[in-house]
Image 1 (cartoon, rainbow, N blue to C red):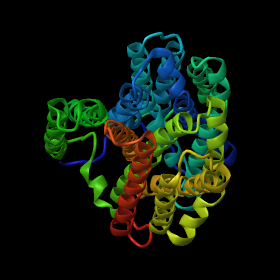
Image 2: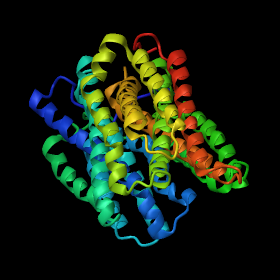
Image 3: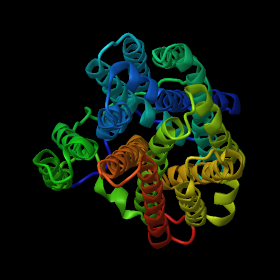
Image 4: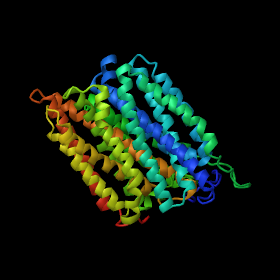
Length: 479
């Protein structure tokens, strides 16, 4: 491997070149993209019970509305990040948003489970291009250090705001018609799409004589296939079984394809993913922390929505209002606390603190029973879990793009987002499998299934804590 840079990539403007007002507009529109993604995910989560009842879907197939999105999102994020680097971040953002809007509006019209899941898959592919484009627009226009930490904390806070906004909106809309939760992100996406050309300037063209663009189609195809096979196996396992050939075969093929991908990248003169990006302890450990944190958080979310509906008999609006404090806490902590903690104590401390709190908060849900203990137990745990999500998400994002050259920020952003997406799909599938396996036991009660799922989410957070303590340096060094 002779070079890790693509000499014909669009050249990003220096981080300090844009005036403060332009930076404010850039941050506004990129945060709006993240807001849209979080909004879409939270609206679907609350609507799941109503969709299941209306379309006669089982729990295993129902989780495909979540996992189908994350499957596509996680599978195509590296390609999306590379496309942003070599084709231009604004251009990729515009095209991805247009596809996202179209899939949202079409999804609301579907009357069968298959086409509805397919629309979620298409949206996941579109988001796989918009997410790293928006993320890398921030990292190439804000100087690394305090300025970027603050921008990425605001970016993470916007996700919390979108998530809690989606909870409230989806609860109210689902009481009318669950299809409305698919139309709302489409309308919001149209507004964001109109703002992008006004806020984000095009990437500057490559300098004259820099040479033609160089692509890595073999690497892109192989890594996408590897990620798709892995996530497909994981999300199908609760239905097919972990020992079924349809699970074991893709699980066996996925690492082989990853090995082939590494071999291709080592020899390509302009690799899609320059492998030295993993030479930094901070970056590598941050990706793994993001994966395990997302597995715990999104897996827990899948379980708790079903618990509130099936055990406590909450309706959609009540579920949304019950979980709302979590989203508000994520927003406030990420916006006002996380960047200060990272500046003062480093990424390792912030990630470890958040994961300890997360493990305790989601684990305590296992003591819940058939009585409604919202004020005495559920609410305090939601607030603690919100603190954990607000700190870990932003800190892992900061670590995942630290000390990366501008022309590779798209791929670094894609890796951060991919880790979170794969973790979300993995956690949802694993905990859905725990629920299904426990429910299948004749001696087990539905309540026992949810308790096991909550303990599983806590165990995932503990794994993330171990990675943070052992993998991240004591301060946010890049090696």
